[in-house]
Length: 557
Image: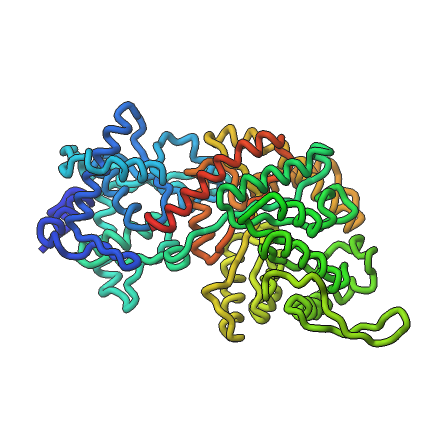
């Protein structure tokens, strides 16, 4: 019988299973199976890769920036076989704070590099004298705005695993380990099963059969943009996205304020983009339908559909700013109800059916729109800022969803997506093909510190412009000190949890979380004030991230 005293480290415990049951299944994930022997060999090879790659690296700790899949477990074993320590920062809200700790990163780049040179690394690992007193992992947690660290030795972790024999007498009927667990809980579940000689069942359901797509999203502030070059930037970036197989461009509708001032007419800009692109879909993001006659919206976008050879989709919003409704003030109070009534009429017109209206003489006439669009049906999204009822209503009518993290966090978004999918199911709509698009402010670079330096001032100015819009709405004067405080807090929230700011490696965990809760597309908002050539050059890094995410979802996960 294996006892706590008969082994020194967690890797010893795992190796006992390799000796006793080498061909038993150690890990099963999404119909892929790995034996104890295979996991041992892979982790030996990866530990040798780390020794060669990091031979001049004085860091004793590693942070893993990967989904919690078979490769995460292989990396943990490899780290321990090198005599190094794992960093567990899953409980932290402010990721950048851990930069003061010395560690190396294992991410997608390292896995791909390892796979490319897989056969050059030995299946045998160099013996390292690791004792039970050595650190297995270091847990970092936030407390009173500071970070506290808890050191977990191999001895202590081993005792945790043996104690689970008494608190978890048998495996539950559903033996699948939740990949959303924080690292210390995930490791306990994994290695307790290894200790028992059981199979670790893993599943990442939202990612396994589809990749996360990327589109470009626009909503720029005129006060931070470059006058007559605005539209050239829009067209150049759209051409880049088209050439690199991005999924879509999203064109907003804004009126009477510098925030988004260059976008009063998404259909006109959509027509321009249609003539210079070949593949990318052209989305409104959004058409504020209660501001318009439905007939004119149908006509305008059918022209864009013709020009683009059937690449139009519309995300539709009810509107929220009272000043916008100078265009049609009588629609403001009942704009939500009006919007859904207009959607019904829009769908009818798009499919070539006639509707009836009074003409200039007061006579009732029936008519249909021209030109006839290419697409038989118009793909429709509903825009939601996080209101659960909007998610439910979108599900009820079978529309897709466009949303953001301005008024909700990822956990709230997860709950809203569940409500949305339940309504799809109840109302007989296809859940599997539903599209959930999430707008994220985006800038990708090669060094985290340089990215922050590049985005901080432009993004804060952008936020100030947005706050100016809010000030008009509430008609209150915000004290300058209070304004600066609000801007600082807002920037830190976006930087930490609500934007795609960082490097390829640093952004993978956020994108993995987003995929896991059901998001299918990222709308990368790029025009928030960074110098335009810098943004265009940064699209190359964004494209690399896009391709890395595709490889994560298709190969690694």
